[in-house]
Each structure stands twice: as C-alpha cells, then as structure tokens.
Length: 345
Length: 294
Ligand SMILES: Nc1ncnc2c1ncn2[C@@H]1O[C@H](COP(=O)(O)OP(=O)(O)OP(=O)(O)O)[C@@H](O)[C@H]1O
Ligand SMILES: [Mg+2]
Image (cartoon, rainbow over all chains, first blue to last red; front, side, top):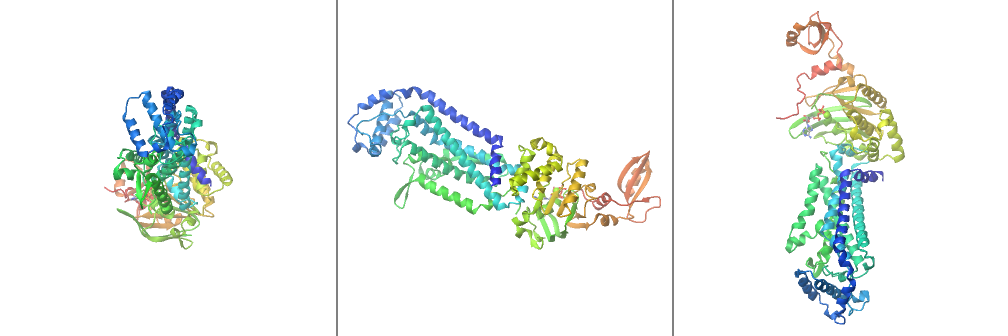
C-alpha cells in the first residue's frame, strides 16, 4: 500500500507534470470563456426562434423522419455558408425532426416544434467529445505517467529499485497500478471540471435531459439517449482510450532511456492518427487508436461501422472491446517486463 | 556465506572475469583494484543486476538467481552512482527507499531518523537533495542501503566524496555492522580500509590476484620496500634505475620510497610494506583505463 502512495506522489512532486496539467486546464477555461463571449448574444433569441418554429406547427410527424432525408438536409445545411437567422432556424428545424424520432422518450407533442437554446450543449459537445479533449487528455497523460517511470532511470534509482526487498514483480505491479490510478483521476477531474464549467457558464442545467438528437449542429446519433447520457458515454470512451493509451506509453517508457524521446513518441502517437484519412481501410483502422477513439462524436458519424457476421457494428464499440482486451493482455502477459530499466538480464 | 564458483563474465568486446572463485564470510571484505578492473561488474552480479556468463553465485548453498526476490530481501546495495530524486528532501528520498523495501511507515520513520542522526544529516533532512554536496548525497545513499538491516551489504565505493571526518564515521559504523553481516565494499583508496577490512580481494587481469588479510598480503612484500634520502639532483637518475613508490621533500633532501625485488644495497633502509606499496607494485603495468577501446 505504501509504495502506491510513493509512486503517485512522484507526479505531484514533478513541476513539469503539474505545469502541463495546469496549462491544459487553463486553456480549457479560456476556451469556455471565449466561446461564451462569442456566442453570448445567440443565447438570447429563444423566443424569436420559437416563433419561427411555430410556422411548422402541425406539419411534423414521425413518418417524415427518414434518417436519409435528415442526412440530406444536414448536408444541405452544412453547405450553405451564409450564416443568416433563417439558416440558423433551418438547423433547429432539423433538430426538431430528430427529436420527433424520439417522441416516445420525451413524451412531447411532435407536432409542436420547440426551440431549445442548445448553444451551451453544442459547444460542450464540440469540445468534450471531439479531438480537442482527446488531444489534451492524452498529452496530459504523457506527463502524468512520466514521473512514475522515466524519472527512476534518469536519476539512477533503477539499480536500487531492482535490488530491493519488495521484489521486482511486486514493484512492477505497483507502478502499473499507480499509473492507472493517476490516469483515471486525471481523466475524471478534467472531464468533470469541463462539464461543470460549460453547464455553469452557459447555464444549461435544465437541458441535460433532452435527447441528444434535438441538439442542432451535431450529427445524427443512432442511439436514443439524452444529453447527460451522451456525455457519460463520452466519458467512458475517453477513459477506455486513456487506459489503452497509457498501456502503450508504459510499454514505451520501459524501453526508452530519455524523457525527451518518451514525450516525442507519446505526442506522435496522438497526432499521427489525426492526420490520417478518415475513410477507407486506413480510416477504419485508425478509429481504434486511442487518440481517435476517445471522441464520442465517432459514435455519431455513421461512416465508421463495420460488418461482423452480418451485423453492422459501430467501430467505436468494436474498438472499445479490442482496446480493453489488448490492454488487459499486455498488462497480464508482460507484467514482468514492463519495467526493464538498464538491467542486463 | 556467499560463494562464487567458476564465474566468468564478458561484455560484448571485453572479458572481465575468467573462471574466478571467491568466498565472502561475515565481516568486511574489500574489493581493491584500479579503475576498470571490474569491481562494479562483480558487485552487479552479486546484487542480481547482471548475470554471470558462466559459473554460479551461491548464498548458503543456493543459487542467488533461483532465490530471486527472497535473496533481494536480505540485500542492501549502494550503487557507484547514487540514485535520488532531486526534488525530494533527504527524508522523502529515504521514505521512498523504505517503501521499496517494504518497511512499515511507523518503523521507517524512526529508523530513518536514527540513521540520519548517526550520519550527521538530521539537521538537513527536510532540505531538497539537489542542494546537497557529493558527500552528503553519498551518505543519503548509504542510509538507503542500510534501511532494511540487510544481511548482505554491498557498497560500491562508499567513501567516494566523503571528507576524512565522514570516512572515520563510516568506517566505525561499518565495522560495527560487520560483526553480524557480510559486507562487501569496493574502493581504490587503500587508506579507507587498511584497518577495518577482514580481508582484501585484489583483482587483476580477469583473475583474483590476492584474497587474504591485509597483513598477509603486505607481508609478501617484506624486505622489498626501501627508503633512502637523496639530494635533489640525484633523483632523476635514481628514478631511471629503480621503481619509485613515493617521494617527499624533507629538509633539503628527498625521501624516496621504492621497490626492489632482491639484494638491496646496505645504504637503503628496509621498511614495513603497507597496502599502498602493494597496490602500486601490483598494478604498475596497468594504465587505469584498460577497458576503454579505440
Ligand atoms: N555495460 C558494459 N558494456 C561493456 N563494457 C563494460 C560495461 N560495463 C563495464 N564495462 C567494462 O568492464 C570493465 C570493468 O568495469 P567496472 O565498471 O566493473 O570497473 P570498476 O572496477 O568498477 O572501475 P571503477 O573503479 O572506475 O569504478 C571496464 O573495462 C569497462 O569498460
Ligand atoms: Mg566501479
């Protein structure tokens, strides 16, 4: 128990790690404040938009809801670049149709389209379930896990560690779990903090229970879930991808002697998949890489599903299973070699 | 009892040991050899950081590599390059080592404070070690090695960087500990050990050169070490014909200590050989950087 504490303490004693974490959180705060000050004015027009919506009163029903139609309309919308109020309303109209699809769940009258001021939720989704967050969280992980591993070698502590009373297996295990605890803590703090920041700043607490598909600007989600569930799903995906990324990084740390190279390898692993094409075989493969996978908006994009035994399975779910299994396997099978150090054995 | 049997060790391009046998009993054994002779290599094998290519190391008749973790439980090791975390205080560093060694927190605290006091570091225990001098760091490392009260204590050049006062203190502590444990110390400074070593192991050319008590080793040079007083202008010529161990100016004369294998002139005064003499004579052909390749 005590060594866990000591290993975790290393991160809190490392200025580089603390600095990077604080910087990331600071950037996040700035992002929230910036998007609020930019979009503040748009938040006020709820009444006006509802008037627009009323024009469609009685013309909506569930038979209209064909997923392909919606996609067509979405495409149409995204290709119109002139940002008029009409456009904005058109988008809300789409959202209403989506919402209609979920009528059983919310029990609203489908025929009365209603505008929710979803700007806050929108911004939050674009930050928390997209590349931004998966990038920052993973970069944070590099620096959080670094002290547990590479500091030992840099400081020449590995000889002492490798000849000490607790035994190598035990120490490997402790270091592994210390890293996972730190990463779990980091992802949770980052995500929860950002979530509360968005909800607080945009004051959208009462929107957490509306269906995610009634939020304009987002791609259509095949799941019938509400906003809160969507973000919880995002959190779970981020957590899984973070753990997977951590096991890959630990593998690297155990074999690379210099901190700079560790950081370089880590950043490369995050950035590379982001530049790879999203379609075709390569796109499908990169989907299960941690930095791509950690984004919940993947589950919305329908392009990334694969056919397994005649069932269409979202690649994200498939990826989650693959990643978790791989992580477990690596940890179980290679537990002993995870911390090799400079020992010549 | 720690027994080395028929051990050989080579690195990619250099043979360090060839078929050596050695035994370490309770008490202080000192590895004495010049730079690059293989002291650290031998110690690394004794603490299971490196594996011998051939041969065995047995602790109480069991192979230490088979004993594995249970052997490491009774081990204390001070590497040549002491490891520490710069941003930690001396106390925190030692707490970490204590955790590695599985000490309980309450015990660790009192043992660490006891040793900090013993090694004169109690006042600075809450200072970050990055501000420590080499000798202070060395003492932190030594305390770390002692924390689990090891039965086998392996110290690689523990006196490096210590001032004379600290050397005396360390020697005293070691000779106390040596009553109960196997202590293996490496050094190339003879004065460190002359008085506390129970035995001395000298290494040369992949082999064990001497493995004996200080007196026994020195007595092999009885009647071969001499002293003479010369005028300053005679020194150069004398040096050409004899193997000079030491020279020292004393009231306009030069006192010269030298080695002569047989039949010395009656003008020369025979003196009792010390370990320094033995060391210099034995390694007179070594450059001190044998291992370095072109
Ligand atoms: N990892 C290694 N790879 C190749 N050669 C090595 C390695 N470690 C040591 N050597 C060589 O083995 C020889 C013995 O080295 P070792 O460090 O054991 O000497 P030492 O007696 O401890 O020297 P010093 O007094 O300088 O500490 C040297 O010639 C060195 O060059
Ligand atoms: Mg050495």
